[in-house]
Length: 129
Length: 445
Image (cartoon, rainbow over all chains, first blue to last red; front, side, top):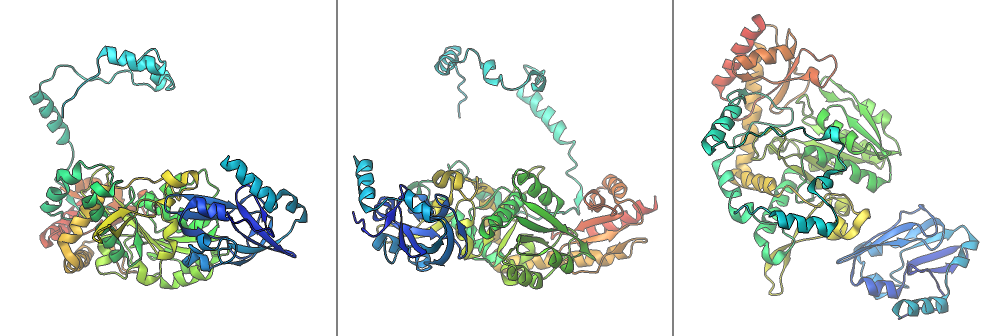
């Protein structure tokens, strides 16, 4: 399972890549793998205000629809519209081409609630154990 | 099928399994004053006696009246083949088509029904049907709320009061704001709609033809609605689409309607047929079943329920709607009816309705004291002004053998003298003339 060291993770299997005040958001390799072939994704709108741990997107695979929760609070800057026509990018490249959106995060302190790669890996081991 | 009642022993077994001491205990949640004192069923009647009794009851229905009533439900001719085909046990007794491997016939029928609805409405996708015109309009309104994230809905008062009442009842526990805009000279007041339109508006809902029978081209309104980021929703009368500009052509995002006029008999309380069709971009927010075409492992064409991730059994509380069924048999009737007519036949049907109504206008105008409202074009239904209370006239006309129309005072304040008259292809020239003569006599007496 691919867990890049430079990202932060949630227990719901979202990841965040922080670049200054901006964070890129997606779902992890583990999540994409568990869902199977993703057929559709419902993304937030540009400028939408997100709240940490609240619903921000939905992914559909052939037999399930799952909610995605915002890892951080803040305003949506750009949305990866590629996913609307090519949702399979989430399966193929969950951390790069399959990112969901970028956001300007507003609360520095919220980072403390996220896991680093090592903690997330241990968390996954706990799930599979 | 045999009727095999439970034995007392089996009943006791079942009761003890769920830990209840008597069958009465199962109903303990119903307060005593709300329970029936008696069902008053006489015992020991013969089959013959029961049939006679029911026959006498049914004869109390005034089924002989010449029907000029519309108001959303219309007396169209239904070819005998509709009953015969829709009554075939392959359709009539089949369970809901979850399993494509044993339900290809039904799935194909629903797929074709969806195709018919798309062709009629000029929109991209239809679902497998909904309960009736009112629930379909409610589902459309909720789609707009979900899509826009807004909670204000503008409803034209030319939308049937039945539908408006349903909209308000279904949303009474949701914080959705409805604003009604007036109709003047039969048509939607543009300026009143524009005054209400803003960045909080989820949708504007209109009806075509509206409840007064007036036909409109809503293209101008729709343009403004879209400019505000809201959705345009129309409730339409499907038979009128044989000759009228379709909702898709006007630019509507969602079209709904009552499908009763497509081969389903008039009956008090249904079952009727709701249809909904939407632009492709809103497909994911459309409620209910959708049947799609696909290929099997041998590359042969087949049909399946598709896009089920929107539905309740998968998405649970975040499903697009609590609708998880459809009006399959009524949708099948609509499919058979429209297939029997064909495209040309359907256009001819719509033309006949239009022309007979126009003929009736000319004949009724000659009745002393009667004026036909001509401020807006109509399809097969129009408003007339009588010199007397329309409710009373309706009563007198029943004695003469006519269901002469819908008294508009029942739905609209200050319209006590107005009567809504519908003329379908079933009404002959002679019947229309006879109708006018009887109306004249009723007005004199």
